[in-house]
Length: 513
Image 1 (cartoon, rainbow, N blue to C red):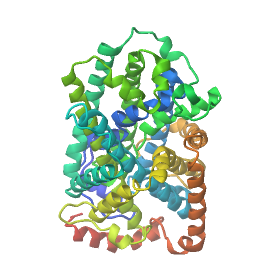
Image 2 (image 1 turned 180 degrees about the vertical axis):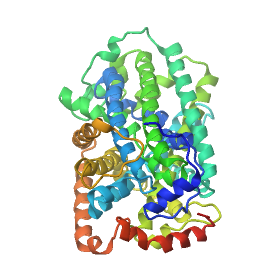
Image 3 (image 1 turned 45 degrees about the vertical axis):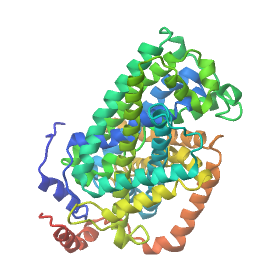
Image 4 (image 1 turned 30 degrees about the horizontal axis):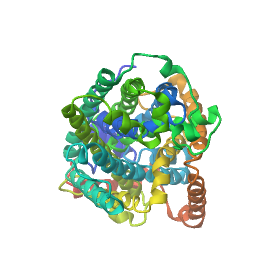
């Protein structure tokens, strides 16, 4: 099917109106910008570096490379499945809205909370990563600071400063945010290429492809205790898949910014799929370079959490080049979390627009000056900072944010699997055709496997959090929310009731239909 690459603003607005929502946010993002925001959140220079020790501590070079491909292909299937739904329903609510339409109010409400929790911990974990990367790559090596005494208070002060500045950039409008995330897209590609070449030129010990294709179970002591006890090869491999899947996540940002993107029905699925595809390709080549640069894979695995830093710091590359790469990696991670905050704030805004959060009347407000959901942005700032303050909870949930996000991805896809051809008969220009249901089944089964892997040691504390979250959501829904929460407008009658509200909301922000 041939579809034009560009539609005018009024067509996007008409589609939004047909779903019962006002064009309150400024529609200023191009298709590239929609791709760039997801690509920035994935940021192979974030999880691709900080989670590298997990791969080495589970299946050595095989897990870092072949495991990356397997996890990345699965992420591509998930992105394509989400893209098909996003093409039909291009709203800022994204997953929550899709689950509500395809699976009912309760399914949508649960999706919203699980997705929001995952998004908050993505921002929190990446910003702690910014601090740690600054400490390990810039503060000591470049500035010569002694950071050995840095602890909780230094980390907290740094995270507050980092997150508040990201909030300010988001506050100042989607144009400012888009400029930064567009730049981030190019930066990640350039730095990934230079970093890969640096490892290959100054670190590669021949091109022994057996390093990439031989699985070695390094759980327990062989992996420096990163995975505390020795496990079977199969379980080790499954745990190691969290390396690519922790990294290649957050691509639902393309959906959350749908109401700010031109030609959203085409741009949103394209943005998600391309963000995952190029992260898969460049991340694989980068991981190959890390493995080939290891003087001794056994020793690298035994380095545990320090595996990547030891490799990088021992490279005999020029000092100026390593310093430049260090700064660029820290900056890329900063922009990754900035894009994550954009996505989180749009989720808060969209859920609040339908009365889903306590204090929704405040969080759904849009600044007429900046055309951004300012209260939602600052709520995202506060929540992501707060998430870092209790170390045991943060450590567990930071590791589990990929788990929560992928569960929230599977929820609308599972609902669509059951609804397709029945209650779901309206589709967008992007269709999977005969691959729709097979991809949905792969997604659901894959996420079930991920759930199993994600609660294995050292992440087993997530069992308690997951059970607690499920119980809390069930109790809240049947005790309160089932009667209070109406969900997004579904059906002609509900959408018709919103018409006056739509006009008033657009007038308040100065939008002319």
